[in-house]
Amino acid sequence: DDVQGIITYENYDKTSLIRYFIYKKQVKDETAKLLLTKTLENIKAQGQNDCVIIVDNSFLKMLDNLGFVKQEMIFLDEERIEVPKELLILKIIFDKVSYF
Image (cartoon, rainbow, N blue to C red):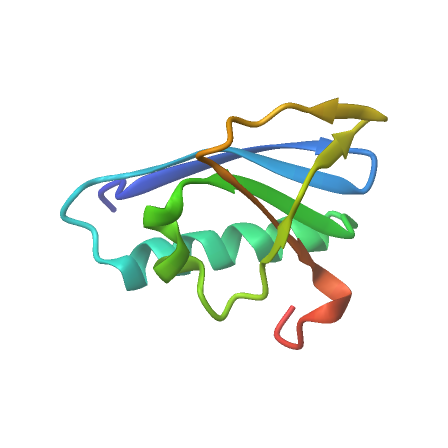
């Protein structure tokens, strides 16, 4: 199989943070969304409660209907993570979405 994209994440206590979500330009949004969904399933299977991703507005359409909710701020290991104003903090809580 040809690698179409890669997602990396780190676990902090019971919260995961997606660090990188990189895929080829020719990959369709549906394929990238499937890659993300499979990653989220793996994160939940590891016993994590939720997952955070920091994105710009161009990702909102692809993330639509997955259950991510906008957050004003995020703390990982009791430390507030500073995010530039042009980026959005989105969080999914696995127990609040039906398909995980």
